Structures are given as structure tokens and as C-alpha cells.
Image (cartoon, rainbow, N blue to C red; front, side, top):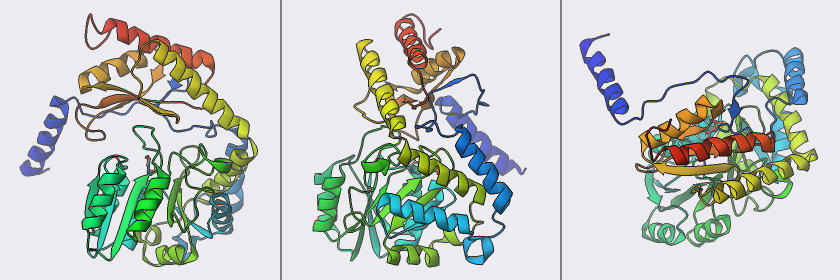
Length: 385
Ligand SMILES: Cc1ncc(COP(=O)(O)O)c(C=O)c1O
């Protein structure tokens, strides 16, 4: 490596390490209690989903072999798109390989320098990156602040305005006020895009998310959902009217220039979707777990954020404190996300606790006991012992 490059990488590393923001990967162990993932309904290990994936591979092959527009668009992809469209009450749906690619692909295909994009400040990184890639004029409005959004929209002279928000905010767990976003967007003739990555499978009528069957494509023309969270598999979809989907098939570069999702994943997702719709008791169990965790955590005096979803952040402030708590939990065999800047604003580092239908009360009790220990120990030493 040239000296200049070596220096550049060393500087970046030193800066991250000094600020306790250096990320490391842990190889997940089977016996770890996972309160960090997004498998909200416990479907990743469901034998029926795993078997559907195995059968999908046997029937369609291990990979799609080409992009959708060449020869990689298989019958199973088509069947999944139709099922996702029906589920979310849209005319059509389009499969992407990941949620990150879906968001890049939608924004790049729809927006250009003659477009103004208005995003909630806490939107997911893929939406921020998609807006940058599109070359559009980008504005961020204060989190869930319709007055701020309204005034930004009122000042814009762009003919094409696009309002973009997470449905469930991925690091905070709170839910966008869809009714207000619809109203404000329509007042300014703006299109509305909701990324409901953490809402589909968990919220709303028939678990179709915080937009799904509740809001039509007239209100929310662009709906994104991901399949690697509550659905337990991988990939994402965009749902909307035929004109939108046809446009994305033509112009969305992260759709066109990539190999189609392995068909076995689509087969597994179809099975997962059937389970999500047919077994509402999973959601009931998830909601009971959320309620139990919140009740007990608040009882212990833990300062939980105001979230009704499986994402339950415990904001601890600085990076060192957050890492200390996460390390203690890890030593107890419990995995929780230690989320630090730049993922969240400076001073708002947090433990991102996520609940799943697969957790037992005993699992949650172990988590609570470990959090309680940190609470008590940190007065004596930091990071906690
Ligand atoms: C709100 C939101 N959108 C998009 C994504 C990206 O989805 P994927 O993991 O499928 O790339 C995520 C997850 O990381 C997310 O939280």
C-alpha cells in the first residue's frame, strides 16, 4: 500500500478509536441470548421457512444466475411480488436484493437535480445515501416535526417534491405520524415515500405495516418494506402503482444491474409471509414481550425511550458508558446493540434492545438483571464490572 493510503487509513482508524467508535464484529454464538437482531417474529429458524428455502434451492437452483431483466426473473420471484402486492394493498411490488439497494434504487430512479427531497432527520442511512446519489436538492426536517416539514415545503419552488420518512425509526423505535405526513405532502403536491422496514410483519392491519392496508397508494405512493427483519429472510420490496413499478424496472440501477435474489430466498419468504398472515399469535406474543420488558424496566428505573415497537432503546449518552454496559451484557451471554455516532447523534449513544416473539420471560428477566447490575455498578466503576 502506498504511504499516502497507509496514512489515510491509519488516520481514520485513530480517529474512530480515540472516540470509542471503532466497530468490531462478534461471531454470533448459538447459546447467546440475542436482544440485538431484528428477527421480531422468530422466523429465521422456523423449520417451515428453512425447509421452504431448501426446497426452493432444489427446485430453482442455488442462485438466479442473472439479473431480472436478462434471464434471472423466475416464477418464484413473480409469485412473491404478487403476494407482497396483495399483502400491502398495492397494484404491484418489485423485489430488491436488500433494503439498502431498494432505497438507493428508488431515490436514484425518481429524483434528480430538479427534485427536492425532504427527509426526517432520523431517517435510515440508505435513504440519506439514496438522496445524495440522486443529485437532488436535499433538506432534513426535525424529527416527526410537521411544522418544520411544512415550512421547508412552502419555501421550495421545485416542481417535483418528495417527502421521505422511516415508518418505524430504526434506532429509536418510534413510529412516523403517517396521517400528518400524508396531509402535509398533499397540501404541497409532494409525493410521499415511507420505508417501513421495521413495521412490516409487526404493525397494522394483517401485519402489513404502519402503511400497508391502512393507507392507499394515493396517500403513500411509494412503500418500501424489507424481508430480512420480521419476515426472517433477506431482501426488500417496493410496492405501489403499476406506473411506479414500471418506472423502477426501467431506471432503478440497483434493480437493473445486479443478479436477482436467489430463488430459494423468495421461496422461504413466501412461506414466512404465509406464517405472518396465518399466525397472529406470534404478534400477540411479541407485543406481550414488549409490554413485559417495558413494565419491568421502568420499574427498575431504566430510562427507556417512548417506543411501542420491538425496538426499545436505552439512551446512555456517551460511547464509553454504552460500551461498558454492552460489554457487561456480553459477559453474561446477552447480545445487545451498542449504537454510537455516526449512526446516532453525538451524546445519544444507546443500547438498542430488540424484542422478539421467540423470547421467553426468563430470557427477558436475564436481560433485566444484567441491566440492573450495570445501573448499580457504574457509580463505583466505569466501564461497569
Ligand atoms: C429503516 C431501514 N431501512 C432500510 C434498511 C436496510 O435494509 P437491509 O438490511 O435489507 O439492507 C434498514 C436496516 O438495516 C432499516 O433499518
